[in-house]
Length: 136
Image 1 (tube, one colour):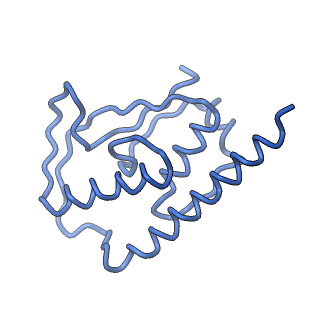
Image 2 (image 1 turned 45 degrees about the horizontal axis):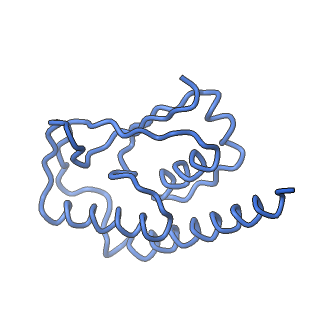
């Protein structure tokens, strides 16, 4: 249905039993990332980076023009665009097993990811200022 988007979540969701097996380091880094995202962007979602998302085609066409890819943070850019258009995002639990030797390395990618987050925050502030300036 138009007006809602669904994001798969590897984060434990209240009242669900979808098995998620992560190493303590992955659990910690995912929690730290979610906390930084909450602090910088005000996004309250347990797992923004899980790749499976469902968005109605009509809703995606509404947000597509203003969507700017941000590498690792594309999912967050998508979440922010959905929020700007008042499209509700619902998390759906998925069963998931960690894959050893993942592609992301905080040592190699951490600074770049932080830059992407700061760029997203700047864009959100500019969008909010523009929106306020257009009000009668």
